[in-house]
Length: 415
Ligand code: SAJ
Image 1 (cartoon, rainbow, N blue to C red):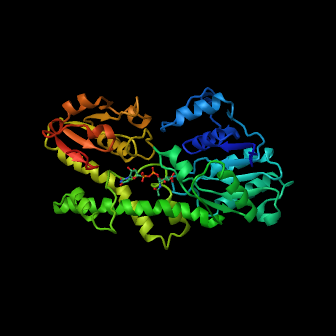
Image 2 (tube, rainbow, N blue to C red):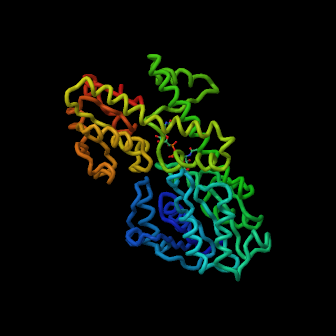
Image 3 (tube, rainbow, N blue to C red):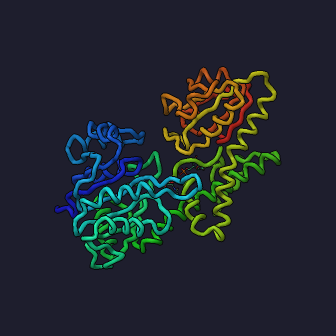
């Protein structure tokens, strides 16, 4: 079978780019992975992985060994470029597009007529067109869809990633993909690319709708999480067990309430709704409010722990979990980190149990009284037990290990 692409370049080898590079390489494409971090590039070329994701390490090792995946620090020519770089929020909660701009500027010199450039990074509406303008500024000898439509030399599309950390290697293949080409030809070529590995459907739309679909998906989840989190505050005040309430309500065939938690973390759901709010500040009332409700939850948890701490002289506070969600090592935008950092301000002893890391992140590492510790020891020493992440290992905690403690269980997991 002839491949529609012999060589594809993936720019940005993080949580999204590396798995995508690996899947393409495993299907027989020569993949050039580009990342500006030389240590990461060297590690990948040695078959090593900097991200904890089930099956990813084996897959990287395999495609590096067969020579299908090579990592480099500067782009090389390829038939297609997938851009998978971060789009974080800056301090004014505006999307920082500098990584996309840097990627565009760095790959522009190696672009050749007929190439496809696909942006996968979650981005505000209009970013793909902006990226295409940056490419055009760098390469006035080539034409782009905004200039030449269907006759453009370079094809440009937006195709948002939709995978869930912890299940990336399956979801990458199985989830349907939204394809938003800047021209029909761009969409058709992008479909050819994704069909190399995709079992899900390719759903074609225009570029701006594709960008908005991605933002709407994450804002939808954020709103549902805000509903659950707000219910948890209301139930606490009314003396109702929110977990019991949700369990019962979810027996209704059309009700599916999510689980409350200590807040909403990660680099996606806690970030992307702001892209919509910034595009339509006068209209995005619910979306903004959901962000505020979810962002307010860590403070609420901190206050509950502080209130509990007043019953003790010098309490040992054990915090279970630090990652932004269960069974991952990812600490980005984690409400648990924020809660531990705030609790540490009061100067007490805090034992942090996080089985997925072997040292505390920088922002907690230098805080007096905060220590990464083992589960059993921390349970034993705890006066106050705060459950922040519903890691599977914590399900094994027997009732006798916590019944005598003051427990603040933000995930409703201890029996
Ligand atoms: N959470 C709860 N209660 C729940 C479910 C989640 O408190 O019932 C919390 C988690 O602990 C975490 C946060 O919400 O702090 C977000 O976790 P998540 O599992 O909902 O989502 P992410 O951030 O891992 O991945 C999301 C996914 N988007 C949607 O489900 C709409 C994923 O498909 C996207 O690809 C990803 O964002 C992304 O990269 O945009």
